[in-house]
Length: 73
Image 1 (tube, rainbow, N blue to C red):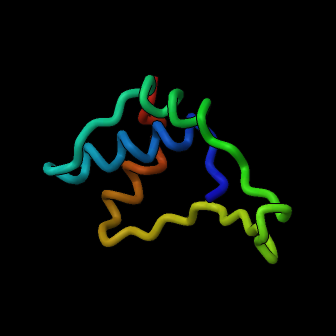
Image 2 (cartoon, helix red, strand yellow):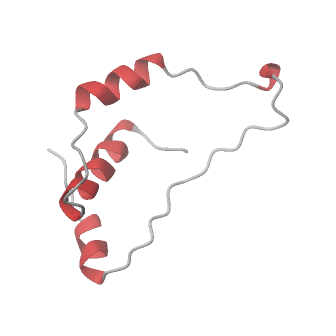
């Protein structure tokens, strides 16, 4: 998925606000994951590498409105 750190933080905050059972994931955990992530390459045997942009779908209009707000500090 094609998603930067700020967008990931925003998505996590949204999930926590709209789902009581969702666990908070700290920025530190995201940064550690990002530092260890290695982009895949065609040399690894993949036929192609596709980056997919995040496109949210909302069941409730209030969730869509909340998602469009700036949720991170």
